[in-house]
Length: 75
Image (cartoon, rainbow, N blue to C red; front, side, top):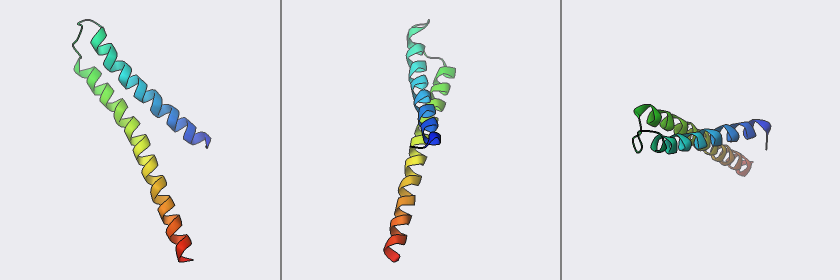
C-alpha cells in the first residue's frame, strides 16, 4: 500500500471516529439528550468525508481494473 493511500485511509477513519464521537458527546454534555444543530452539521460533514473517501476511491479502483481487463482482452 502506498503512503498516500495510508494517509487517506487514516484521515477517513479519524473523520469517522470524530463524527461518532461528536454524536455521543452531544448526548452526554448538558443538556443531556439534546444535540445542537452545529454538532449534527459537523457530524454530517465528517461522515460525508468518510463516505466519499471510501466510495470514490473504491469506485475508481474498480473502473480502472475494468479498463485494464478490457484492454488486455482486446490484445
